[in-house]
Amino acid sequence: MNADFQGWVKSRQLQIESYLQNHLPAENHAPERLHEAMRYAVLGGGKRIRPLLSFAAGELNGAEESRVIVVAAAVELIHVYSLVHDDLPCMDDDTLRRGKPTCHVKYDEPTALLVGDSLQSLAFQLMAEFSLTDNPKKQLEMIQKLAQAAGSRGMAGGQAIDLESVGKMLTLPELEFMHIHKTGALIRAAVMLGAYCGNKLSEEQLNHLDHFAKCIGLAFQVVDDVLDAEATTAALGKTAGKDAEQNKPTYVSILGVRQARELAKELQHDAYQTLEHLGKSTDRLLQVTDFIVQREF
Image 1: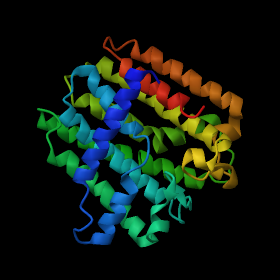
Image 2: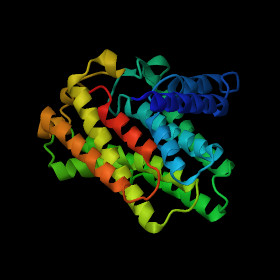
Image 3: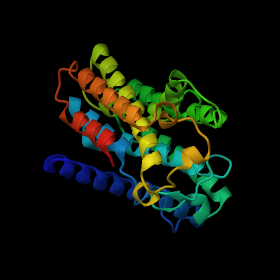
């Protein structure tokens, strides 16, 4: 990372951390244990890649930071809720997340379940409570897009396919379909919602931006699969080698590490080319793309 981008990332990470700290319920508000667990799950961890994408997309068309940070926080809350639920014994059954015990290990399974439920509700509360655009109809559309990205036609649906695929050999298109939903849907939402907070983009520009987001959503997952196969638990902050242990289909299990890395670079190149069609300053989106693809490689 160059110094300018490194400073931008640090600044945005601090912004989103502060915003989340201020908008999560205080630990001394009843029910105290649930609120403590919500803050435990959300604060003090993660690269905040989805919020970074929202901020970068907002810079394309002059979006006000006070609006972008709301959608950035909402997307991150949905993401963390999914991690808390994914780690439960009935899902991936993991004990480590972001370098510390998972929520159900630190507290208990019923509390973790309620943490996820509450974080999802809080995300939509923020989206409805604050002004995201001067057009109320557009704001309703933004709420709808986040709901779809999180639901059965997005993240939750992808997780269902993932659970059904354990022990099976998927084709590459089948794996891509799964991750367009499981991982990609929320990443696409992060990009598009950030852009919607700013000045209006043409339909053609929005289509290019959505294709860019699709590319980096898949690239993110490819890199994740490689890291799961090659990185240590200490480096990842979560249990390494979990995919192979659970016999899950991944880009590494289908393509091998070398070809998976090549695929990530191909998706990165596709994302670069797509941004060229926007006719706007896309430097931040390009830098975040590199940040996603090159992390821990």
